[in-house]
Amino acid sequence: MTEDLKQYEKSIKKKHSFSWTPKFEEEIRTDLNKTVIIPIVVKTFEKLGWDLIYQEETIAEAKRKGDWNRWTEKIAVSFDYGKLTIKSVSLGNEMWDNGRNSKRVKLFIHAFKEIEKEYDREALAELEQEVEKTNNWDDYEIPESLPQPKTRKKPQFSIPIVGGIITALLLGFIVAFLSVEGIYIIGLFEVGVAIAMGFILKQLIKISNYTFYDNLHYLLIGMILITYISNQYFQYQIILNQNNFQPFSFWEFMQARFEVGLTIKQLNTGWIGLLISWVLQLVITYFVGILRLSSSLISYSLERVPMEVVDFAYYHFVKEKTEDQVREELSKMGWTEKQDQEEVFEAIGAMQGATEMNRME
Image (tube, rainbow, N blue to C red):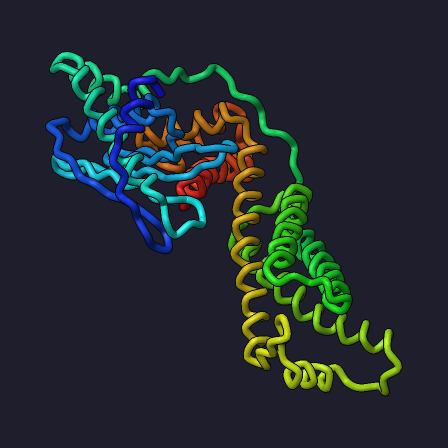
């Protein structure tokens, strides 16, 4: 960002926002058409030093980095019939933005208008041609050859199933042991369990070459249920073995747990508090786990296919060829096996998935 923009940013009068997710929005009018408007928006992002995360015909989004190289706000700009809407949303956990979102929006508007003035009719016509060439991949040169597919084993769902069950039981025992020892921290350990599940699933995906999301999603849900159900059973066994109690059944153990309830800092929340804590365990682990699983699938899908092959296939889709026609083009380049072709298509989908994950607030 230039020194002039830094000085202008300091002069902006802030408008504070208070909410669960603080945001600020403002609209301006422009005479630019929809072909050139978003490219100029992107140039504005670049001038401000913001990271572009998404771009399409009438929308562009960026994230701004603050201290510690951490994204602090997401700025979304949309165009509709001469109206440009700029919205900034806080990415932290604060409920008061201290006026930062209003500063981002007003700074963007100032920088955008500066760049807009640089374009006369000839420059806009030239930019429009460049945009059309970029969108149509006109500068892409079809290679004479592509990297050849590696020899891979057929996808095997049995490997993630077995590995997932073993992992869930092991995590269930660890959680049970920590709970009995009294060092279990609600929230922190659920995140730890989810991260561990995500890491193990990533390794199992690589070993098995299995990437069908729906089945892996169901497997993750099963792993979470096994972990926390087995956690209760392992607690029962640990308590039974560590104390000189008369033998009692697992069912009696669960009844006793409900009768005692959950105590937090000398406050007994009863069976309702205990039940809520269990629901929170499942919810926290699920949402963190699903993010880790999605990230692992995207990463692996992109790793196993060379980017030159992905670009080659995507180019033919841009040229409005059907899936069968793209398969024919891949076959001409040595990618004849259906499994290899499917992996190319999955890599294209993974690129779109990575973009959507970056857009998350």
